[in-house]
Image (spheres, rainbow, N blue to C red):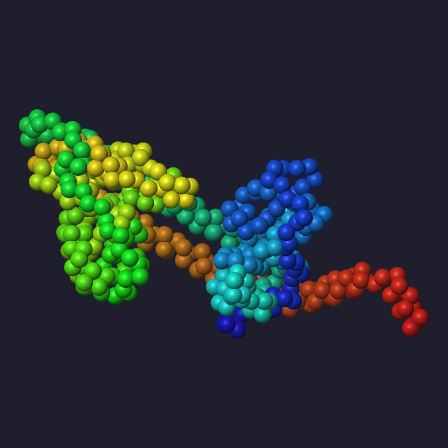
Length: 451
């Protein structure tokens, strides 16, 4: 830790500048707003900032808008929040700062997420290590400077948040753009000018996938035979991503003898693969990808289909058609299965209708789609770069704030050392009050006799 602080600042141990209380699950909860009940803040409400349950306050530990909330247990432990009012659940810790700005402390704890999670405790559900958490050293500015820092942070971080919100819209825009390109390509709108310039009057042929490509379903390879490394990789559902297979997703391999026995399921360059099983109603499958040259042999697993194009259709054109909304609507119309798993049979692919242009126009469609997708890919790379920069910007601004570099200092401010003295006095006062509350009438009588 950097021990150099600006003039008038002091380090203060977190445990010594706050009061705290751990949440608990109330005896009575309801999903509908109920008279006398208050919002219930569990991890779900904390993350989404949405309340969907209400608690009986008489059996709850409560948080005020000035309390800093910390996720103490679970995969999201170490996250901090401010400004939520209600009953806190058992995974939440509430901190009440003593005579310092709550938002100042909140902002500093935002910079400590990785440190707080550096050594989680627990073998089942992880939780924050108390020793690490309570030992955090807070760089404490004079109180008036805290207020100036908070005001400046609010101003700057609101601009960063606005920038993030604008950037977050870009993936959806790019997705819609790519789908509109595919829709225009498959309907003929994308090449309408090309047909006019070339005097092409041929109409699109109304046909089906099985009429233009050979369909094969995958083989049920036995998982006990799988190897961690090898020359013959099995392409499974998780490897099938839109346009290009992801062979790095949990790769498994088969021995040479099994590969020889299942040669008919070996994939060739320009084969198209489609996943046929996923989560019902979520449409998280039915993805199509084209097989390219790889440094290994690829074999088709069950619930993954293969299409091998015949002469009248280009593999890339078929690939684009299979990614279009028109195909996916037909595909999922035949979905079966239970609540957790959705399946589409072979006919959901083979019988799918397709409007087939002449080969010359297919080539032009592929060329134009690739050019437009290349443009979208370039925008996406710029988006990723900008997002990475903005994501780092918040931490950069916070770091600057707590080095004393964000706002000018005022030599007339009361130094933090004086503030710490008042905090110590306040803690002693609170402890005396707590001790007095713990003295029962019987104990008081005993104390009087001893006196």
